[in-house]
Every structure is written in C-alpha cells, then in structure tokens.
Length: 51
Image (cartoon, rainbow, N blue to C red; front, side, top):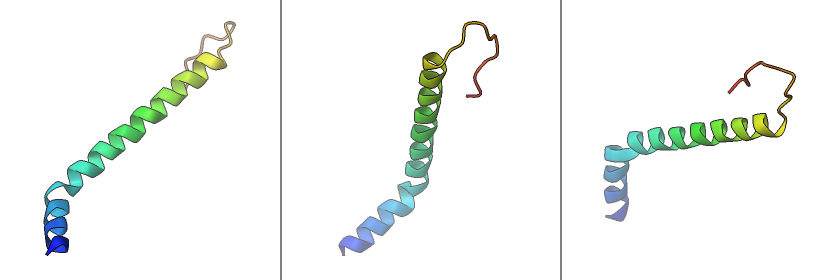
C-alpha cells in the first residue's frame, strides 16, 4: 500500500523534484565559480571568469 502511494507521488512530482534539484546544483556551481573568481582575482587581467 505504501509503495503504491510513493509511486503515485513520484509519478506526479518526480519531474518537478528533478528540475528543482538541477536548479540547486546549478546555483551551487555558479556560487563556487564566483567565489573562486574572487579568491583568485588578478587585478591586472580584465577577462571575466568562465562561469
């Protein structure tokens, strides 16, 4: 019984969960890229980081 309910919930909301998880990982990636760009900034270079 519980497995059926879990399967229905996953079927109804699984794609939304996956999309939200993808957005979270993208936000973490951008954040770490910005932190690294600030940490290793070279004032004599004008190029933007590849974030």
